[in-house]
Image 1: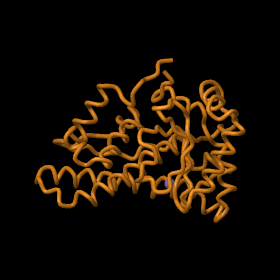
Image 2: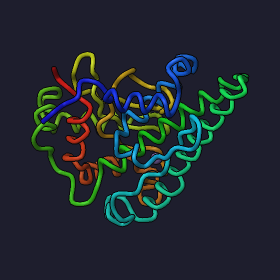
Image 3: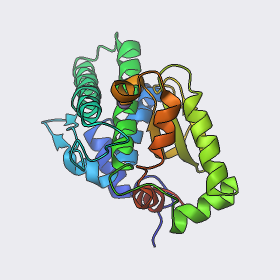
Length: 258
Ligand code: MN3
């Protein structure tokens, strides 16, 4: 299978830059703009197809469709939680991200970057929220779980020793996230290895350039209705809905070991 050696193709990159921010503007808003680059890079062409252009440099995101019915993750995650999580929280991040993009558009047109600090912060927060929720809902599913096969099995064995060891570390990291956040399986392109990260504040990129492959949402909204304060129970059950072939798709699309 073909693997890309960078996050997005030249075509996607130019599309991203022309639609979202020019290169100079990307530099100007520093870390937050890295999030914008990450959004298109991490979401990939599927999500680009979900987005639409609105005049000028305007680039708006649409809430991508939920890839299965709201009750499909039961009994691990109940229908009501998926509904609220998707319709309120995920949609809220998309809305917030679009508001930031509109504010930046306005600022570029007027030349007034007085509120750039606050907007950049909101852009990173909402942008990371969109990216991580997209991965979350698209790398879990019904008729999933169990041990990965193929490439993900090989990579996990190489970098963690075994699936059992991997899951022990991933579950421990997810359970131990302070307050809200994420357990993250990511690709770290510099050492070309898989890593497990904790993201306590998702607007803070934990490792620059790391490519998230599979994430466990441990914000309370992801499990509270069914599990209340029993996060460990939710994380333990989460293994039953990880859709490893989808994770492998992401690996094949974004990662290279060469
Ligand atoms: Mn969430």
